[in-house]
Length: 374
Image 1 (spheres, rainbow, N blue to C red):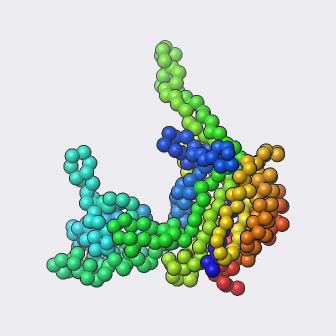
Image 2: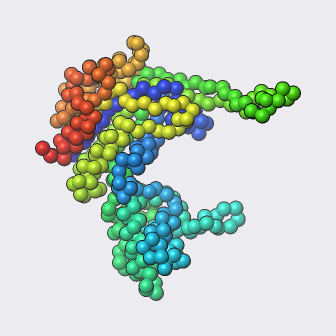
């Protein structure tokens, strides 16, 4: 049976617009018959990857870009300065030998210009970039570096030494499906536990020079517009397949580091959309983490019926989550470990289904249980 670490969080969001749709309005969805505030899983995963950059060794974090040829070329030059003039062409050879469609300069206007790029975003770890660069350097002495790299099976280099974010969030390569990496985690779209209707703020900006000129006819606003926002109490959920994480990373210590980073970053990260406008950074009020085998189960059903405010939404939301968790655990499966962390004034209902710990103990004990460690 597959082992999963599941994390559930309730988090207050003040007026904000961290994740916009194509019209600039906060994203939303209908659930339980009413409109809810929504933050997409992609938005929060990007925030988590940004947090990884602050938390992990740079070699444990990947790069997702159309411009990896430039990254490989820089690594080639760093290893062999005398190859600087050939570095770009060798990098193109390395990408092609690894199974990607040959990168070419992009068409801008009527001409192709700039460094060669792939036709889509490619996710690669720093170790994979360095390995391809080293393979290119090795093949540079031969008359046909592309053929030499293909013969050396450099494609295998891109299917090993995955970064933690590739192992967690997966990788899809249209040109070479055997380079795909199955994601070890599932991240749900965050949903408000109650009905949430976006609002719009009308703003103006004053032209300072005109404002100082008493004789100016139009000394008022220099620009004006509207910005959408919404406030909500969000339910957030993710499930981490520990067995798939082992397959993706192989190394036991890397798996432990990945679990630590995933749980900490899920709790502490925040999408950055319109953050300077709204200063909306918060942390979860309540976090429930379980370790169990078998099919993971979101507890979003606790909020299918929108929460009614009772001195706010958070307290009744915590109570609803605790009641639903108890029913789900009794009906379907009881977790092997259940831990809760959060604000002491709010999490009391969850103590009926989980043990209260601090955030570091929550992370350490969850990882140890999932990995079968004492």
